[in-house]
Amino acid sequence: MEDTKCILTFDRKKEEIQREKIIVINGLIEKDESVSDKIMMENFSELMCRKLTMDFLNSHSAEEIYAYIRSRFDFVKNNASEKLALNVSPVETDSASTVILDMMIKDHPFIIDSLTEHLHEKHYKLGLMYYIVFKVELSEENDLVTLQQGLDDAPDSYTYVCCILKNFSSSD
Image 1 (cartoon, one colour):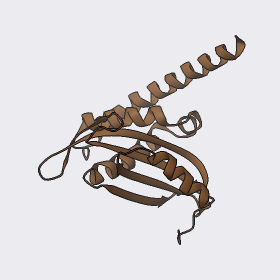
Image 2 (image 1 turned 90 degrees about the vertical axis):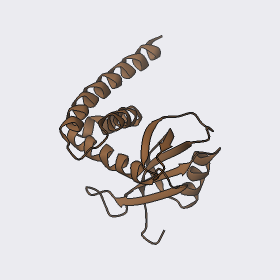
Image 3 (image 1 turned 45 degrees about the horizontal axis):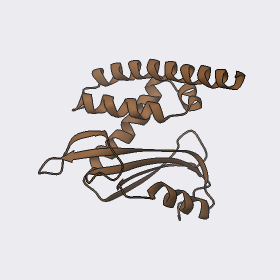
Image 4 (image 1 turned 30 degrees about the vertical axis):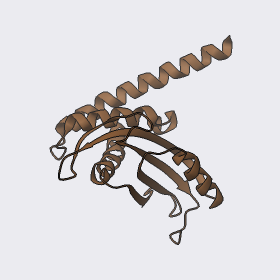
């Protein structure tokens, strides 16, 4: 019974921190004139905050988390019409061998398993990995119109994956 109480307390604390960060981030989105679709960005931010770890939420300010989420949102928005898009960016505050890998791919079974196995084979140390399945609606010009949490295997679903990798070499 004591273990269950600890887990429930931890979950409530995480939800409280997530809620606090989301409120501040939504305020930053509202002030950010470069965000054209504020509702889509707010929905994306909330989904991302729910995926981030307690350590990440506690060790970064809301402004830093917003910058991180905004970068991920721009990647998703700019690549929503692609069957596969990848981006590798160095983590600025860490060693050069630590990177963030963003991947947007048309959803199909075993994406996460296949990616995890590949990263393991390459001997990368996986610092953090999370994914979100989105239902995507595009305009005739292939611009992103709607982005909402989707269902696996829906015909217009994409999987967004973010990994923080250590031991990454530029030759990879």
